[in-house]
Length: 287
Length: 258
Image (cartoon, rainbow over all chains, first blue to last red; front, side, top):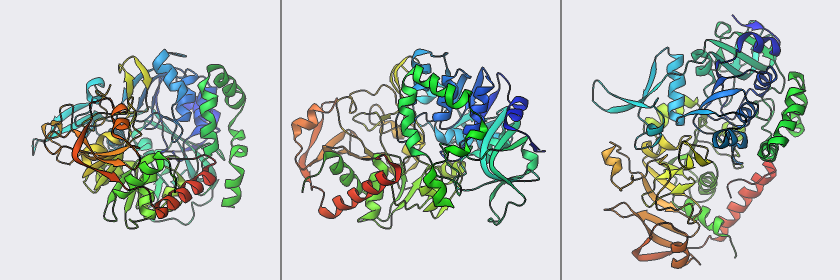
């Protein structure tokens, strides 16, 4: 059952060195505050899973938290490369990074298989692609009814899922609105789950009967971090900080500039600093 | 009226779409072309982004595949597993729009690495949705700026299947969909030879020359028996594209998908 903890307590209790960790959020609701706490607590040898490793995983990789990355698209959306990820893959800095590379369809199916308690995902994919030649976890299976050759990949079963959402109620039920990505599947596939939320409320309020709700018994820890998805966004709360995504290209290009930025903005900062980072204009638009 | 080669490319790509299309859209050039089509001659087109937004009508171009604008203007938003399983794999998409770092004469795309996979000289973003978009959509349009470094004789890594390394691999892999039927660059348009599936130039953009196309292509490019001239962007197309780009720049503080 969900426990209400501070973010440092939640990461201390549920994220361990060597864990398989999935921090999800498809452009939207990326759990930056929680990821920064993992960096501050100096977790090491993590296997990081994420469909779209963007700035948050660039930061984790550049700070040496990762041993392996499982992913399907690694870039700064609309801007360009992830310079820290490229430095690790191309030059082994700050440490060599093992990669396991998939397509989006494979990752989405693998999360769903994990949530469904299956050992693998079966789908029509990777046809004619070289990816199957470089990733031994891409295999094929014959349909027992038609004989069609289908792709198979292992289910994703993280030790811990980390996501950000709009709201939790005081019983620990979590509401996700807008682009919901693979967060529900990620939480249900994982052994443990940490959820940061914009706010904790008495009641989740008016919503569709089909709203995406994670019941309290699927979540290990909940912690409120206003602005905790910045520079990503939270539908209904604040917009994506596109200017920061562009600025990251310069910050991350050079090792020293990156390390200095991380020291000031992550190592010497905390979850309480996120609220002030929300783009001013976006706050006014929403209010 | 003056216009850039990038504007010509986006307009030519937009013209290839119709109101009947259900289109799976990538970020950048494809997104600009698809939304220009929607704002001009194809108001009924259905645009789908892999973030799960169905029939979205953004007022500005998204910077990322999951911008809030896409969700706020969509008919509905589904989960990422659903978009790939039911909508893409389920065969509900008529056309996919792709680009990449490298393309070869059979429309195979590389968006993974330059150099050796395990010791790359350049690590590119990777497949994203492209690998399955290419085989599950009814047909594929490719839009890319043309240089000798991007239109290559042999791609370093086959991320996304076109017609295969010898032009016959789709059938051999059991793929039933058409694959790439149109390649739009900033110089010309190419379509596959019906027999060999090699991309052949069938239309030169107004002002572009055969020599330019040859010197910006890494394979010995062929021209169709009769090569047309792509009509230049008309004032309505240009005005719609420029207004879209201006709204986008004002919204993001950065320009997108030129």
